[in-house]
Image 1: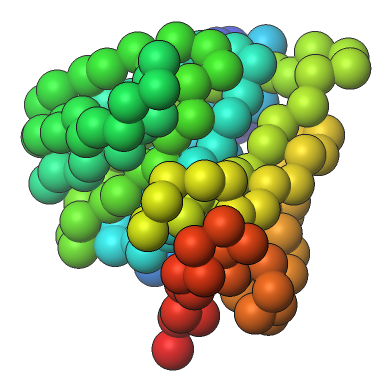
Image 2: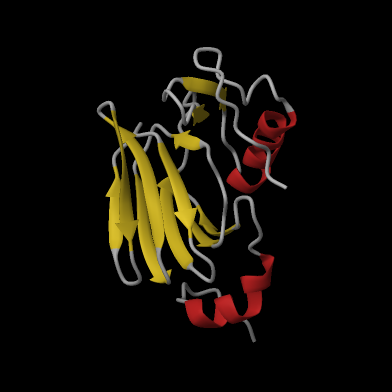
Length: 172
């Protein structure tokens, strides 16, 4: 008999049954969607894009470690988040989560409000100019991000800096 009561679930059991479903480039599975979106995210990943969102994002590192690359107040720097640690990223800070092999994290974001747009942005590694950015309404990260990332890597002109000529190589 199934109960209609609210109940908790076991994250470790869920991971044991679903870890194989979390694949690059995003490696993300939605656990809950309401006012807040709760996602389980697995490493490794190799992303060079920076995500910009209108709301805050909360990170908790369940297993292993990750580095959150940020571009904050004109400065690029890394925020290491190790197993058992948490971090709340302020709204509108460009960030690029770099997850290590065999790592698992939980990310909580609020639902996008009407009219709010997300941006994926790539920076030149030679002179730090913006190489390319694409703005979109995000309904589902797992569905919405891969086509944008694929378009970027499919185009040599998008990956080449107009200022200094540096070019990002497409992943193999």
